[in-house]
Length: 299
Image 1 (cartoon, helix red, strand yellow):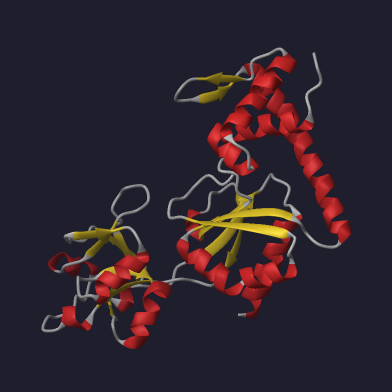
Image 2 (image 1 turned 90 degrees about the horizontal axis):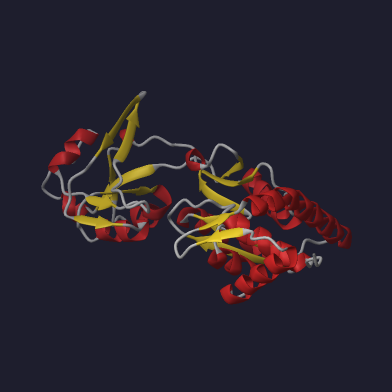
């Protein structure tokens, strides 16, 4: 058996952990075909098949699972050793990949990212903003940003930005001549702008007051999947929208939108940056977390 190179083993671990040649190739910055050839070469050197491949799925063989179980701790130890060298040099380096929802990305870009890039020019920050909740380990991210209540239980969460409110908002022109709703159930008699979640389901508006909670499947003939679009449609008089406060705040200040059902919209736990509990926290992520905590503590 010919001894494989470290690059070959790292390629195997990437494909095995992501269960996808495409995702592993994206994370490693190589072409899918190059990665496929590397795995074929590794299997040839080892004399065993590491993956079961079909046109629709990819899974580890028993030999592949055994190799991954032994290899992952070794590669993590190597990451720690290289990270130690980076610390001794005095500044973090490498790539930091963060997956965030749109609200989180906005806050980070406005308050943390500029300072981080100024302090750590040797770090390449890859900030991906999308609505759907992804498996950050499977997708090759170092950390994620979501509402605290959506963070998986096996992750370490660093809360920031304070509590958030979802607000029911509408344009004065839409409410002109009609009596605004006073309870969530009243929304059944109004035109609402519905929201499509990344999962494909329509969002049921969730309200709370003095311990009572209610979720309403509101009526409406317009459904959108983006908070900015919801706010704009509400400002255009298309009906009532239910959005995070930061998205509506600019138009609330100008009077283009007003709030309704305020007493049914209490604060809720806000955003958190999260990362795997069992994984080594590399110096770029540690530096980002430290900066995030300092900014949040100074607010």
